[in-house]
Amino acid sequence: MQQLGKTLWEIADQLRGSMDADDFRDYMLSFLFLRYLSENYEEAAKKELGKDYPKLDKEDKRNPLSIWYDANEKDVSVFEKQMRRKVHYVIEPHYLWSNIVELARTQSGDLLTTLDKGFRYIENESFERTFQGLFSEINLNSEKLGKTLTDRNNKLCVIITKIAEGIAKFSTDSDILGDAYEYLIGQFAAGSGKKAGEFYTPQQISTILSRIVTLDSQDPARGKKTKLDKVFDFACGSGSLLLNVRHQMGTQGIGKIYGQEKNITTYNLARMNMLLHGVKDSEFEIHHGDSLLNDWDILNELNPAKKTVFDAIVANPPFSYRWEPAETMGDDFRFKNYSVAPKSAADFAFLLHGLHFLSDEGVMAIILPHGVLFRGGAEERIRTKLLKDNYIDTVIGLPANLFFSTGIPVCILVLKKCKKTDDVLFINAAKHFEKGKRQNNLRPQDIDKIVETYRFRKEEERFSHRASMKEIADNNFNLNISRYVDTSEEEAEIDIHAVMKEIKNLETNRAKLDKEIDGYLKELGIV
Image (cartoon, rainbow, N blue to C red; front, side):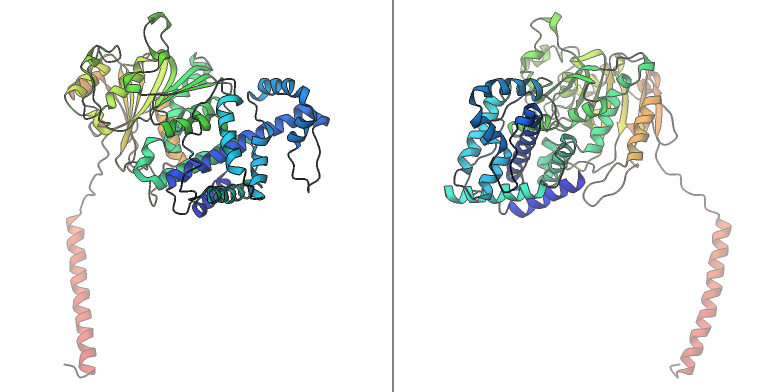
């Protein structure tokens, strides 16, 4: 996976020319997505048709499926019905990656037109439900590709040929290609600087959140179910957090994945990411909309008896996001029992949104800036009530400079409506990391230590502490981690007598050296 990711990144770096990394990302990832859909489809078609699948010589560059379609027009509809049942989608032969690559190899003038039609076909006809706008961020007529139609066509020929050559020797396995896709997203995020915070959660942090929300479900001894019916991320970005939860549970461990994303580019990226990781179109639902406005129909409360709730919620919303809550927000069912988060920071608005839709037995893990732990005003009122309601389970402090979008240290809040204890576990992992050139990294042992401490609610000096509600109340419901886990280093005791002795020895040695130097100077006739 790493080698494939690096190969693809080198290709991207060579080919993008004057194009911004963000712009080229859309082309690169979309072609990789098309390649996955095509290879997966052709492999399934070969199995379905068996001995009827055309066998061609190496010199014959025609697409075998195209030949079969032309020779069996009457059977195409039956074949496609079977393919929809087995792989959940259909792609007509001339839109398959292998045909696109051949058009690029032969410098065909039809490449750009075929690509455009193929993208529209996949959006509207390939799947049982439509994925409108899936490729909307790819502008095949952009002057960044070339000033004329011919220039743009030629540029695409080069890009596609290079990508095809680069990935030809690698496995088409969805896990490997999916992981390489994630690697590329991370690399583009690194090149995008602060913009990356909009859509990418570093894998190491994603792993912590996903392991935490799936722990109970993976431990039958705790009397928990071994399947999560619904998993939700209301600020899902590229979908990496949701995919990590799926990875932890296994492909059969989740009923359905739900995500919401406001940014249209990232929304499309998330949908591609799901499909590329082998998640069937019936197994996920990603909504394009604003979580703070709660504009998703399935989350409305017109019929409280049918309220949608989730067994696990993970989120990395934008930090201290400035918003403009309407005057009516005070009556919103998500906020009315607490307070409306201030305009300067929507952190608690995001948290309360997720908490409202958390099931009674569910677990929510959310990444937030440290300010939520101690800021006053409305945030203090919200924090105090959450603590009195016994919803805050764990506070985890992470090292600084883990994100592409910010260098500030952040925390993870774990919330439950089914807490069995009346204390709060504090974990200070701020000093447990590996320093990197641009970003710091959490090592596997750092992640394991955090998760195991959470799992067994272990107390360890200078790392973790279980604070009672009385202790928290005595601190005026301030959750600043340093109040509960002391990480200050004790100063070493100084033996003044030993220091004086060492000073005397140094003075004696200096006197001896002075005498030696004087001797040398006299021999040289300098003094």
